[in-house]
Length: 142
Image (cartoon, rainbow, N blue to C red; front, side, top):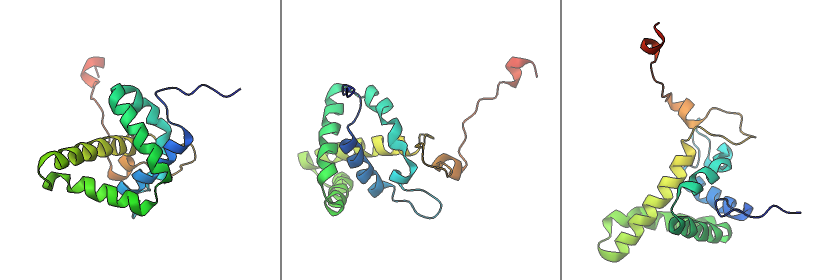
């Protein structure tokens, strides 16, 4: 019997749409993997659970469309969203929100440090040498 679909998870098709968009923002170059190669989509449910319902529904609708859209159409959408800061008025406002939403989800996933089960290379955080740590030596008396 199939598992019921959680409102905080994406279908396989929506995940594919997310990967297609992610590959536009993080296509992979040099030592950096592409968004889809990294497999960070595996931890998207964590992000979805933190989104307000309206934002989550909007993102899911967009990803459902992205699944079927050719990459060149998605490229145009991204270029239009990236032009949002230079466009005045309500159209620019909508594009700026789209840009912020896309970048937030995609870069949060890409730089989360999480990789998919089939990815064997270094994460983007390892590549750039980013490591957050807290010195606790004083607390332990060392």
